[in-house]
Length: 141
Image 1: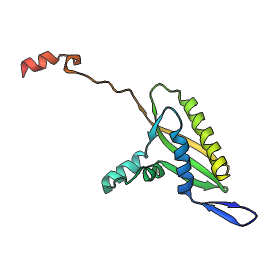
Image 2: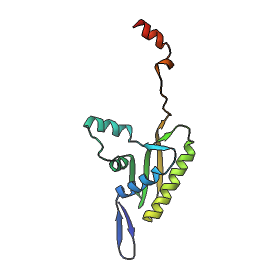
Image 3: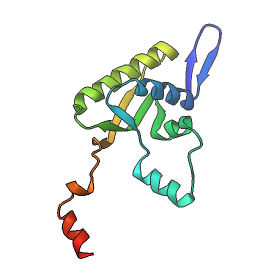
Image 4: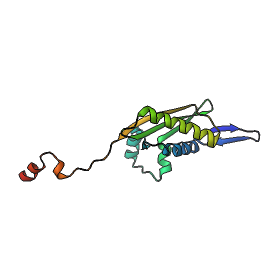
């Protein structure tokens, strides 16, 4: 929880609220396909049989917010499109998240760590004709 002190009292901002705002800023970045849970969390959820009820819950699982020195420390697990420069997209994400939190909540961030969990390659559709030795397979069987 993040505490902001004002003249009239304190405002307590939950980590989920910070995560929701980060998720909104993340969705605005071109080249980000989505966010992803860590592999350990995926295996744990699979073994438990947990299913995701909605997108907000999914985003809150892939965006981790910790408070360090009364400032949020944000860790993102994302998937990017093939062909984008990783340093450029990381810089864009960090600057948008920082500006978003400052503008919407009036808080500064401690760190924004980005973990690239995967790259989404363009999908190609293959027909039988494109496969190597497809005619041979059909003739033998």
